[in-house]
Length: 90
Image 1 (cartoon, one colour):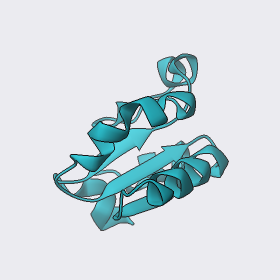
Image 2 (tube, one colour):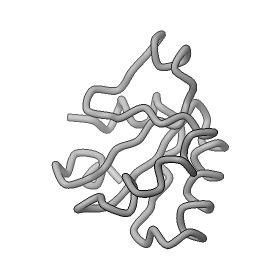
Image 3 (cartoon, one colour):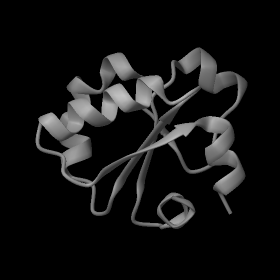
Image 4 (tube, one colour):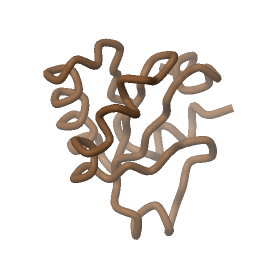
């Protein structure tokens, strides 16, 4: 997972709310809250590399991953919670 998170081709997406991201953010991650994932499907589909999603604990990002897979985004990974992502980020 560390390799994916630090790959410059990876589309790293934080699916927490804007308020949560305002408290703690991950450098290089794009914030697309879970409820806005469907409206941003084209952004996920146009990603040049793998898609890695994360949230606070991993539950919302698992929902996002499953929805994206069901809607044609093939290379999607759930990194779990943001503390894990922060620890793995170079």
